[in-house]
Image (tube, rainbow, N blue to C red; front, top):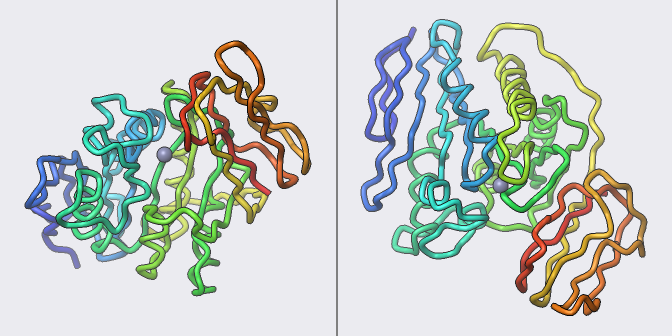
Length: 316
Ligand SMILES: [Zn+2]
């Protein structure tokens, strides 16, 4: 049994796909969306890209998935939001919304009467997150970030949910899978997991470059997930994952020039020099040493650094 499907301001006919713009009552932003209303009732899955506007590979992966999904082959429903933060995308704004300089991936569940990013988070949570059963949020290295692909799931008190999320995060041909205990508040996947739903982030691509191989890596992983939950037919692939439980971020305390001493994918030990901030005369003014033994998952590649900017992260 299937029927037409109302999603926000849009109405999808039965067994059909619709492309359009999701509109919200109180803000200017309109989000491009693909809505796929499948052959039968079933789970509603959200595939999202562009929460960070310069993570181009993830945006391309979401658009390619939205274009290719065929309602005749889908059991259930799919929502694809490829550019969830259009103002950041067109402003080429690194990390933050151009209107309030706030990171959308720290703002959930948002504020109805807040600043631009807080309001956008509020409406995405109300209109989208609360209407879906699963969320796959695609990211990558930002304009000034190199990274090795990895996935993240949220560790909550709900052990069954954590197990399901961990399984879903392991469905990509991506080695590193991180169980995060939520030291970063306001994230997409943490907010959706707290609603009792399976939610993950997958990261591939970097530095403002659209990488087709990394886009395909993300797309194949998403399709594998859709098969694993019965939304698509086909064989489910299993991969060997390397599970990490600590995600250690290092941030700048001062302004200066960032000289990393490691590369992405490097194994580091406690006490290893990770990099240093130098002044404008080339003298080291602050050094960063690893507080754990693990692997460098992302690395900021901008020479210019401001206080509180991320520098790199080590997964353990
Ligand atoms: Zn991101």
